Length: 464
Image (cartoon, rainbow, N blue to C red):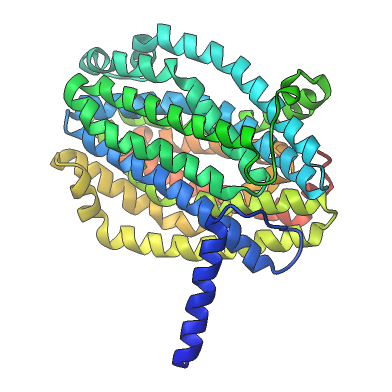
């Protein structure tokens, strides 16, 4: 490549990145698909990168308190995935519905759908917050925590659950922005939320111990939600929500719930299976569960950016189906899947070569490090498949077909992964490594099944 060509290519890439971060509205139903994927993916990947950074920073500072603290955070997060599941289910419904309305050029309909999804989130979170706050010690005990871990972490778990409304809204409203194609606003809201988390976490841990980490999360994510609400009311980008849009609308709520219930169940099935997996590992002691949680945080550090790429596929599918362009929607998925697979191949190589130094940077306990390194090296063997699978799953969800991934998850995770993990870890006495091998085998299977069903094309016929 000649010097002038290199400069032109670099200028084009820089121009695309700037445009993707500017927040300027784009029509993703026309023009280059590769360009559309890049414009949406850059802010979504950066959004998830910040979430990844926070997960690592959080476990880094908490790890300085002790392995009981690490176990508390890990077990609490495992149960909190139930809240994430509800949030993701509503977020999927909001993304799919808003994207369809935007593809149909119906901005008013998009605003109404967004407001009704917020109404639903507020109502659902009350029950979760009260339950978690009152039964925090019992939750940790049920998850297999030692008496020392329960004593150390009950306050942390109570605060996190009591503030789950900000978690719910942060996920949901970002789903609204992504459906509208305003990926840069979603990115900045998460950067603000987790940026404050990172700053406040070591300060509040110093003064309040483990519960300081929970307070930092609550404050940071609360500020992120305030930023989101400001831009929704201001009308930044293509969507603006007014007070009238919050007036309860049974028809819109029913449509959202139709998508959200199976979307929520989809993530509940997945999340609940992870809870069982964490419980299996916890049976081997605090060292095993601490090592497992360290490895999961590191794995998420690289998985979440790939999830950002898959979110771009969901938006493109929704908007192009709304514009009556199913073939363009399918091609968008193929392009996104290719990019994601290449990224995940690079990550696999990083883990196979550098798992030891990566874990050593975060954790100082040699026994915990041994478990975490083993988990990273085994689970990352299937990263290429995970990358493609995430895109395919979000393609179904973006089309409003949340039922198909739900059925796939139910069969693969509960009928296959959990029995396999138990058999390998306990029956064959492999230990925690048996759980890690079960995760690898199951996630690869999920991708294969998803690809077959995607090729059949029934997702193109879903009405939202």
